Amino acid sequence: MLPENLFANQATLTTARLRLEPLGPEHFEGAWASLQDPEARRLTGTHAEFTPEQIQAWLAGLAGQHDRGDWAVIRRSDEQHPEERYLGEVVLNDLDADNGSVGFRIALAPADVRGQGYGTEATAAVVGHAFDDLGLHRVALEVFAFNPRAQRAYEKAGFTVEGRQREALLWDGERVDAISMGILARDPRPALPVPTA
Image (cartoon, rainbow, N blue to C red):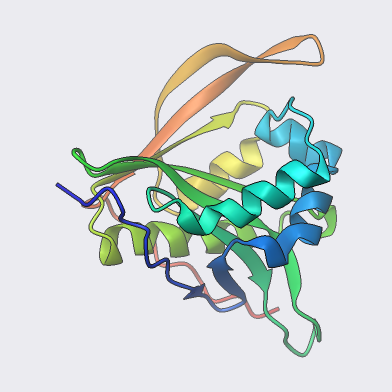
């Protein structure tokens, strides 16, 4: 059995191009901009409307929630990108300490960064942390059927399709299936190539 406060000392994770740091009030501008992105809202099935005050309060309270891990996805500076940039967030939530399982979600909002492998890179880092550092047994997620790009990114990180929830989302008058995916600590995790650009 894992402790209920598994995320009390949330680590900062790094990859070839990214730094995943604990999400907090200092990320308000990026988080707020992400919530205004219509495509990001569609891909995550977000119907709710939020005020700036609600988002500020949410971000301020995350440090005290030790049953979940929320990371800001920051593109690190390099020769091609001289300034760091907030790309979105990645989350481990719904901790079931008795069974060693957790939920996963990621949202990258700037349209110009989609399709460049950042999601796969961030997903692999958090999944590796979940299993190798935290001792979790299972990570699960849902992805909507109209988001095959995300499904491919999850598969590259080692997730497998486990089922389908028919017509789980109503979006703009259309019913959309949700695909259930999961990965276990013993499942193979593909080695991701190091991006060159």
